[in-house]
Image 1 (cartoon, rainbow, N blue to C red):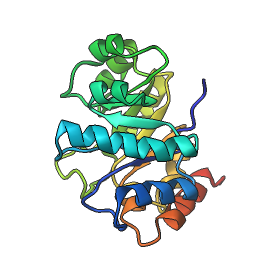
Image 2: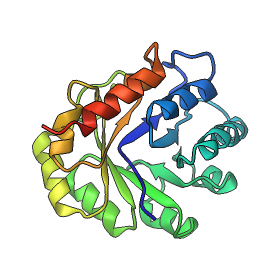
Image 3: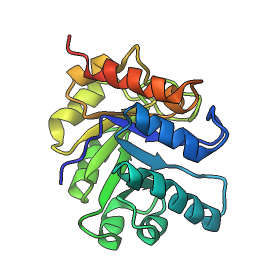
Image 4: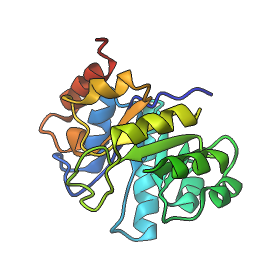
Length: 208
């Protein structure tokens, strides 16, 4: 099955412009988001589960894949499309054994070594970053463009870039063979989420 990674929304309740997360996610999808990752770091497992069920009802309505951040157990419990893990989470090789072959496994990588290992361990796509400084993850290690290019040449799986991505720099990543833009505040924090998503999508798809 082929997935569209082009505009990959990562949620963050702390910076969304809407009253509810459901509204933010739906507006982003209506604007052109092609994938949604639910990221919840400060709520209980039970609340994360219920939130996942709620958001999945929306993503299912529009046939958009829902990815659960870090929690393979919750991804399995709600029948999400996949799970995304970081370098400090359960190893990708172990998560690959936990989930079905049909489920997507995304892995964050900031170096060529991490990227190649993730692919070897069964990752379906990579989240590479942070490309630029970002307020949503102030301690994130920055990835030079040269490292991104090296990763792109070394792996065959899709790559989404994250960290400080916006309409002003979206087009340069398309030229590098990147498959998608993973964004938080560039969409979810904007006054008009639907419009922000549409503008980012247009910028990324712009042929220059």
